[in-house]
Image 1 (cartoon, rainbow, N blue to C red):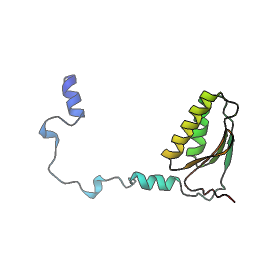
Image 2 (cartoon, rainbow, N blue to C red):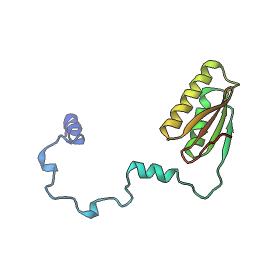
Image 3 (cartoon, rainbow, N blue to C red):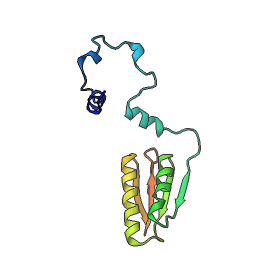
Image 4 (cartoon, rainbow, N blue to C red):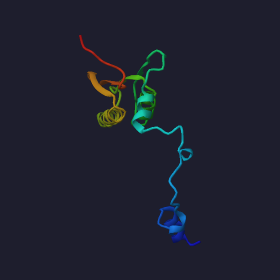
Amino acid sequence: MGAVRKVATYLGLGGAEQYSEEPYGEEEYDDDWMPASERAAKRWQPTGEPSRIVMVRPRKYDDALTVGRHFRDGHTIVMDVATMSTMEATRMVDFAAGLAYGCEGRIERIADKVFLLTPSNVEVTTA
């Protein structure tokens, strides 16, 4: 089979002999399948473990992986970017804001160059 034909077959553009007119039966579906919204809700449900607050003091932008890992695990993060250059601190805060938005969390400035990232299941109140 030629490379073009392989690509066309992979993209579903092959001949009609590939298709079956029979409808899918219930046995064809995966029992573990669930919509993305349900998977996200399940991921952010409390697990009975105590909540963790993680203090992160990144020194360079490469430390964004640590922030992302803790936040995706459902931890609240206090991020102090005071030791970073202004340019890298701006990049880190932009990354954290995108991370919070993408995971339906929140980011708040709590002091000069200190930010609080909270997952969607954490409520922050001021007194």
